[in-house]
Image 1 (cartoon, helix red, strand yellow):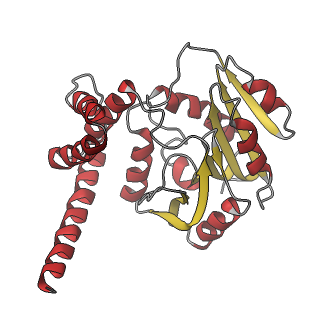
Image 2 (cartoon, rainbow, N blue to C red; image 1 turned 120 degrees about the vertical axis):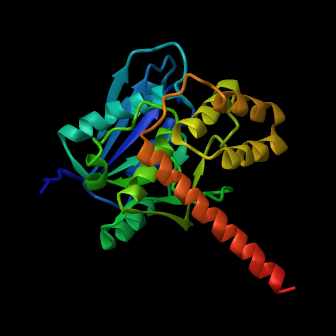
Image 3 (cartoon, one colour; image 1 turned 60 degrees about the vertical axis):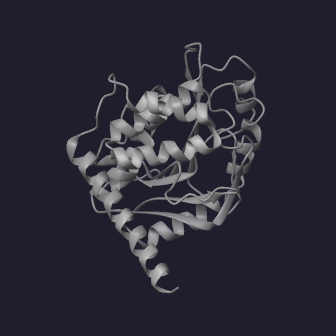
Length: 278
C-alpha cells in the first residue's frame, strides 16, 4: 500500500503568465483542503512570472530552460507537466490535479471533487465545469486524477498528440469511471480557443489520428470546426492526414472506436424515439 504524503498535488505549467498566475495561485491557496501540495512548472518564462510565484508561500517552483516558444497544443506540453509529475513520484499524493495558469477555482472545488472520488474508488478522473462550456468529459485543466490509477501507467503523460484524451480513454479501458460535475463551476481568464493558431489546429488533427478516431467521427469533428473557423478546420484536416504521427497502441485505438460506436448507437436511438413521438 502506498504511503501518501499529501492528499492532493496540483501541477501548473506556466510560461509567461504574469497576467494570470497570481490570481490562480490565490484561488488555490483558498481551497478548503489540507495536505495540499502546489507545484508550478515555470516553462522558460521570460517575463515576471517567476517573481510573482516566488511571493506565494508553500508554492514550489520547478524551472525549465527557455526553448524559445510556447509548448501549448503540442506533445512538448506533456513533457512540461511530466516534470512536475516526477516530483510527485518522489513524494506521493493520493490525487493529482493538473491546472492551467489562468484557471480560477471556487474555494470548494477540490473538496467537492475529492468527496465524490473518496466515495467511489472506481472514479479515476473527475472535474468541474468551466463557465460557458459544456464539457461531456473532464477537460485538461481542472481535472483531478486518482494516483492509484495513474501509477499503473507510470504517472506520466505520453509524449504524443492527444495525451490528455489518452488518459481518459486508458482509464475507461482499465475499468474506471470518469465524470464531470456540471454544477461545480470555475472560470478562466483566457477564454478557450482564443489563443488557437495554425499549429494548434494541426495538432488537434494529429491527435485524432494518433488516438484512432474513426474517419467518420473525425470528419464530423472537423466539420463542426469549419462552421466557426473554416481556416482552422483546414489545418485540422492537414494534421489528420499527416504521415508523421505516432499511433497509440492498437488496443487503446480499438477501445476508443468502441466508445464512439456506442455513442453513435445511443444518438441514433434517441433520434428514433423522437421521430416516433411525432
